[in-house]
Length: 210
Length: 210
DNA sequence: TGAGTTTTGAACCAAATGATTCAAAATATC
DNA sequence: GATATTTTGAATCATTTGGTTCAAAACTCA
Image (tube, rainbow over all chains, first blue to last red; front, top):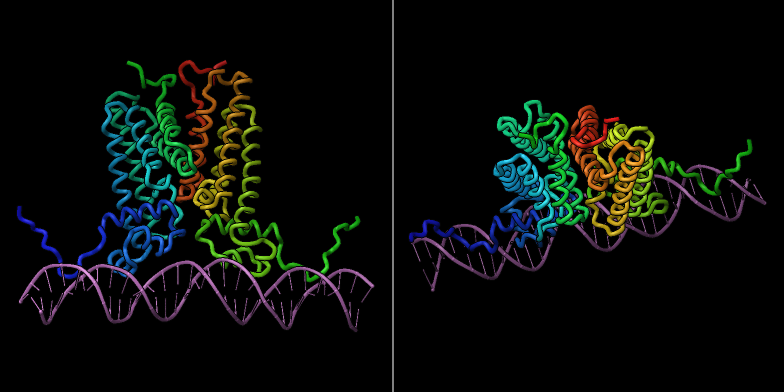
């Protein structure tokens, strides 16, 4: 097999770029944004100081890159959890379970970069990115509700926007609790109950009828 | 009327102690914990640097004091909102509206010290305080649900703990949205809808019957 | 008015932090 | 093996930050 990646000219790097970024994610997740120093990044990413600046830029630039990659990854997982299951209940439960899982994954500090950390960053670009990400998340959940209406799973007057916003709020709440130390086990159970709350049979609701 | 407060001996202070603490609250609410420098506090509180240290102590001490005072005040407001109205629905709506109002009050940065800021502080005492505060909040909502059971407003098998945790999660979610710029008007409407979500007539539920 | 007391502002100091420089190291190419 | 190229680690520098010192100011009390 032909190796079409020719090695670059000079001294090879002693670190893996994407790996270093993942470790940067952990640093920001555990210490927030303002709490992170360049020394923290140097130590956490395993990249020498001059290399860090020349390859990744300063703290703000690194954070923005980390944030975008994080949103990309978690957003894809969320979409998958939302659109894979056949029933709406399983979709919502899966979506919220997924949120709980990323908020309690081992090897990272509990919580979520997008929900717990980024909103505190005093930076216009971060704010704009967050606005867009939140809007995208809402749109995702709303679309799933609309699919459920089309499938006749819920009545056509189902309050899509309100319920989507509530699902996201419940997810945010559980994520904040994860950050404060609530166990994954507890939160996974709460995720199920939250999905039920939004969909449980109401008077005049077709959810589990027919 | 006899003035029983004898003026202290030396040079009078140029600042009001409780007023300065309130302004410190604003500083922390707008910049987080790690984002605040002593200079920020000096500027924000209107207290000279040596006075600040001698009267209030260092940043951590000030934050703890601010946090306790904040929790005291907001906790009392929350309890009032929760236990004043006669119906459970009005209690929950009032509780959530109150949360929205403190999260969007003018003159302060949007958000909540207890929900958005304090959880990121890497300090054992802060963590412990937060744990206790959260437990107290949950107990408050649960008690209101129990009262409603006693009053026959909801059936005796009403899932008190689960619903209380959901109410708090919804409040947390709305508070986070406040921090990210969602308007008070929007959030107040969402507070009503959240109260409805938790209590709206279900099949086999006595909520709005009788 | 003068002595005693407390607060204040300016200056000051040490430590932490952000960022760069530069020679040595590690590689490809000739 | 010599040269060119890139990365690296150590050292370095300026700035910010946390915290203290001290003389002057503002007050009470005798």
